[in-house]
Amino acid sequence: MSDTDLAVRKQRPAHLFKPGESGNPSGRPRGSRNRLADAFVADLANCWEKHGVQALETCAIIEPAVFVRVIASLMPKDIDLNVGLDVAGFAQKFQTAAEMLDNSPPPKRLKVVHGR
Image (cartoon, rainbow, N blue to C red; front, side, top):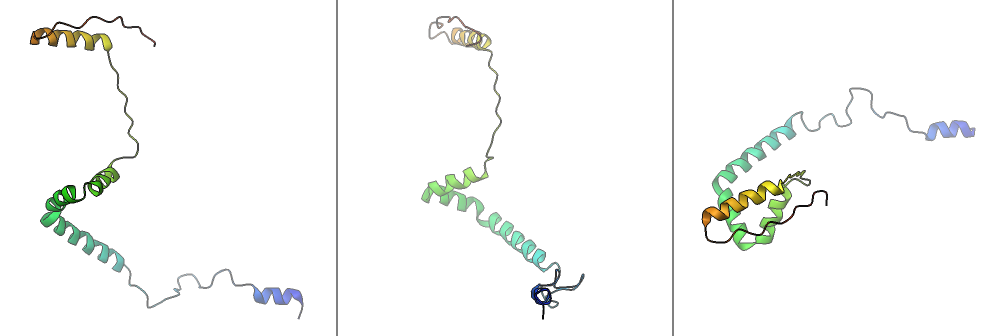
């Protein structure tokens, strides 16, 4: 027997099963995993309606670190927050509000330097 013949015999076929042929013909029926998942979600929803608020309150009191970790896990990882502030307009509104309250003198005006 030549080395080539031996090499060919040792090689496994590219596909063990023919197209449309299963390795486990009596395996899990189609859709059974979906039915299990649907039943689980329905049971979870029923349980939440009965005990959800009470479970949150109990967790917040007995294990506040776990409670905060759960809340943090629900928050988005990145928040794109762009805030613009009109300093001169804010100062004017603050001065007007302080004058309306009439319980403290208006603050000294600060010179606003733009670009720094």
